[in-house]
Amino acid sequence: MADKIKDAKIIFVVGGPGSGKGTQCEKVVTKYGYTHLSSGDLLRAEVASGSERGKQLQAIMQKGELVPLDTVLDMIKDAMIAKADVSKGFLIDGYPREVKQGEEFEKKIGKPCLLLYIDAKAETMVKRLMKRGETSGRADDNEETIKKRLDLYYKATEPVIAFYESRGIVKKIDSELPVDEVFSQVAKAIDAL
Ligand SMILES: Nc1ccn([C@@H]2O[C@H](COP(=O)(O)OP(=O)(O)OP(=O)(O)O)[C@@H](O)[C@H]2O)c(=O)n1
Ligand SMILES: Nc1nc2c(ncn2[C@@H]2O[C@H](COP(=O)(O)OP(=O)(O)O)[C@@H](O)[C@H]2O)c(=O)[nH]1
Ligand SMILES: [Mg+2]
Image 1: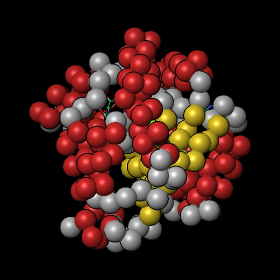
Image 2 (image 1 turned 135 degrees about the vertical axis):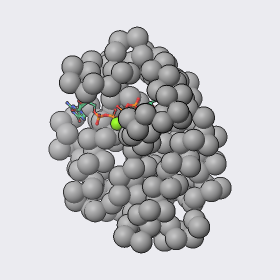
Image 3 (image 1 turned 30 degrees about the vertical axis):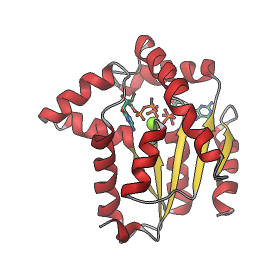
Image 4 (image 1 turned 45 degrees about the horizontal axis):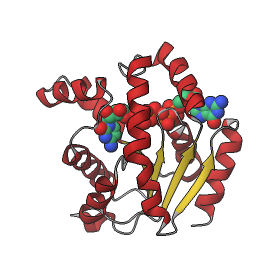
């Protein structure tokens, strides 16, 4: 099953909540025609469906915790298979959240050729999320949950970056700059593939 996707490029997009992952991914879609899969969006779609599983997910996300690894991985895999015939590359946004997630992804799907590390200061991320919270309607864009998401990011997700650094595929992107300047760094990394 996974061999259908084996020729497409896989890019992990990792960064803290509100760092600008989604914003940059949209721009990559426009310029390069890659398929954007946000693990958070996939989970929110399941919540919106009102299914029993969605209800369980909602409770976890509201607390800013991680949903079980297999749940997210299965969703990503299904979405990748659905696009396999038409996609030349995949942006996996917001995944892996912890080293174990990365290892399982590689076992079940394939290896990433690049990890875009979208880096912004904690203070910047909080500011952006509070602003986004005014209009996003996201249950987790509130002060209390933002704090938990940040803590978990530093504890569980930052080690992911070190893990892939040892493989030499990490490109650190300074996301404190205006969106277009952030994107020129992203484009340079993709052009170099
Ligand atoms: N691989 C993932 C991705 C998401 N989540 C859950 O979904 C929530 C929202 O994920 P996401 O949209 O990726 O959130 P952030 O990166 O925190 O924020 P953003 O959308 O701003 O990227 C997370 O807090 C977490 O509860 C998860 O458990 N595992
Ligand atoms: N100033 C500035 N704001 C940004 C930038 N990237 C994203 N934002 C804003 O920050 C918020 C979070 O961005 P989003 O792409 O949803 O981040 P994600 O949580 O990493 O997916 C949004 O409201 C964006 O408009 C950037 O490079 N510069
Ligand atoms: Mg996002």
